[in-house]
Image (cartoon, rainbow, N blue to C red):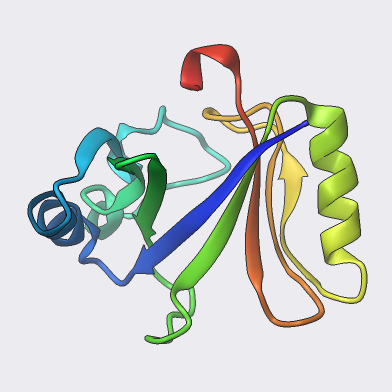
Length: 143
């Protein structure tokens, strides 16, 4: 089942500043901030030293709305003005696969759906209309 969708902002190294800005400007409650440096060491994904303080994921609550944001990973393309994406949160991996497969049809795979440290099924696609989607399965303790 789809739990909901929410905006996801991508920044080019300024996500920590943005968290503080939205916290003050929109009376947002900061529910969590994780940096790339917080990830466990993984030989398959080495985090450059200049990326360790960048935000991998932040979650803010503004009224009844969830706002998520992160910095781009160094070396990933970044174009100001196209840095707003959409996150779709699901409660199981089977439905996540269905949604991922539907959205990628006629579009482009950015990150194949896979287990991560924060989700049993996470992936990114650009649909055939140019909208970037983050598909994420939420485990009960992350809700």
